[in-house]
Image (cartoon, rainbow, N blue to C red):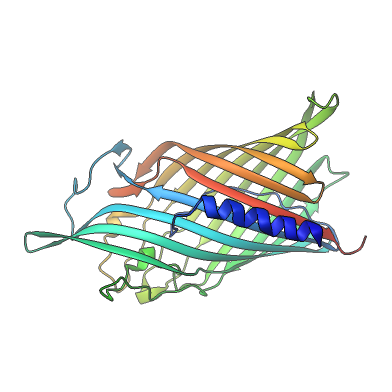
Length: 324
């Protein structure tokens, strides 16, 4: 009970210092959740992405550089998410991801020669995801091969409006209105050991993962492009209570299908590469706090799009083994 109270208190302390908003942009990070029969995990995470830069292709640009029905200005994204995990067997775990989305969005509406600023500021439940993880090969924790499969459900809000009751574009709603499918594979192994500052040694792991998201038609038959993500990650526990984290993340997004909307799909999709350093602090072996600072080192978007100078994610995780 004491750990649970501490856990919740820390989360709201962090959340109060990262007040902003969230939307369709997400941090492409990979997490190796622990699994074992009877192991339950609860994670609260907070994600901050401020898309206030304009890119055309792989170059910095400016608002309205490519004329359109409306010119994107900025989107301030924030997601607060609850993740619940449970190990049904040593080789099978289930995750439930429940996001709560808040977003501020600004664009300029071009109407008969007039430039009219339009703004939205809304919050709501996002689309929940259920994901199953299968461990195929994992002898003594030295290496492992795993597969994952899941589904994203259309639980999110799709009718958000601004103060003038104008509906937000389907691309910035908290929910997509679609049922999407997720597939993944992962390989991990221990590379070597290094001395640490606690006068001991730490094992340095390496993890490779590939994830694919197959999207279907959602609100007004709009369909987001399918998405491929590649991740390489490692960690170094330099103290008994702290570890350095590092990820390299690649995101490849196909162009969307406009369906029955007037969305400019020529401005959707692209390629991104991120370097994501982080820190993790252990209050004990079952309670930890982490944070990632994600830096885009390469961006190549289709058409003209908003981009962020950096992404932030912080989280707290509590693990409980019901069989011990």
